[in-house]
Image 1 (cartoon, one colour):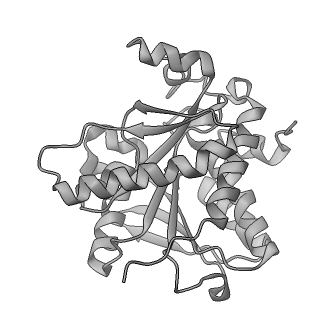
Image 2: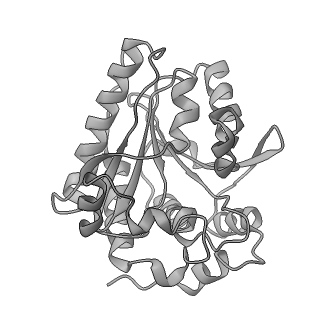
Length: 268
């Protein structure tokens, strides 16, 4: 059974400088972690060694927001995902070999409640578009700390979304299914959820899929049209260490390991 490390308690403490924590953690693992500052938001880019990339295969961009709702621990939203990704990054660089992972910790996701163009990742997605980075497989991980059922977030796409983009999003969801099914012994679901950082990319014409986690009993609650406890805890003091379930960590690590070995050929 996974044991939550003491460092995680530090990460969710009220006084934690989360940007510095992330950078220092990665630096200790031998990884540079420069800041991409866009419109007063500090996104953190993980620089893996160049030899860990194979140009024959597509880049897999992994994103998780490290900001939290002001005045809350943010243990599930989104500290657990971020902390696991830190441990995963350290393991990847130590293991060596190719993985084709681009890892970015975003800032300002919580501000997206004022509109997607207020999300910190919106300017990041615009930068991707400007640089021509539009064919990556983008996986957004948000609130992975409760439950045993990985969930592929589905959203009602605006009517203005081109059919080509909608098709690519469905293809990416199918790819996400291939990753999560073996990680959770076949338990998974597709559910309508709120947007995460995936919204910023989609409105900029870049396909992205968001994944989250729920306890089995709460999936039926959502299917019944009600709000599950996990989502009720968001942005409250109850989004704390005690609300997390250790089995979620194990499933999430399985998902990440499956993602690291996934190889998709570039479109020629």
